[in-house]
Image 1: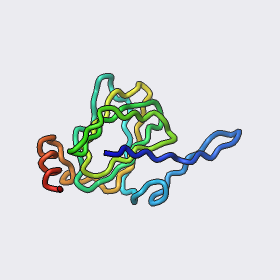
Image 2: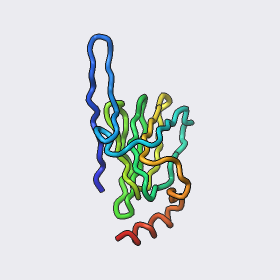
Image 3: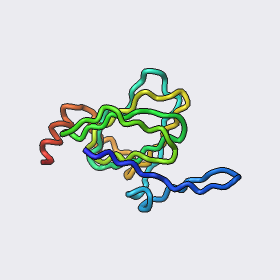
Amino acid sequence: MKVEFVNFDIKGDNRGNLIAIEQLKNIPFEIQRVYYIFNTKEGVRRGFHAHKNLKQMAVCLSGSCKFLLDDGKEKIDEVVLDSSQKGLLIENMVWHEMYDFSVDCILLVLASEYYNENDYIRDYNEFLKECKNDR
């Protein structure tokens, strides 16, 4: 499994910096939903699911967190997201968990679809079965 980061261009001068996020340009899909995770308590893990169709771009606006990514064939236990200048692309059918949130972590997520509970796979064994069916 390839971990894909997208580096965002920084526009800046003596007044500060700006990053523009644009669908179908530096985000490889149309953005239908935006949400963010913050004030996550120490030791808490989030995620524990995959999506059948939805794709996501995760950006740590502040602080840091780690991801576990699993495509049913390969599992990567630690992907660090610690910069507002890059996004982590999470394709569909990738089981993901977020953990080790810093106290100041604000994790922004851009999603390709509106919220749809039917798109979620929340049971890991069911996810593995779906992956085998896709081959």
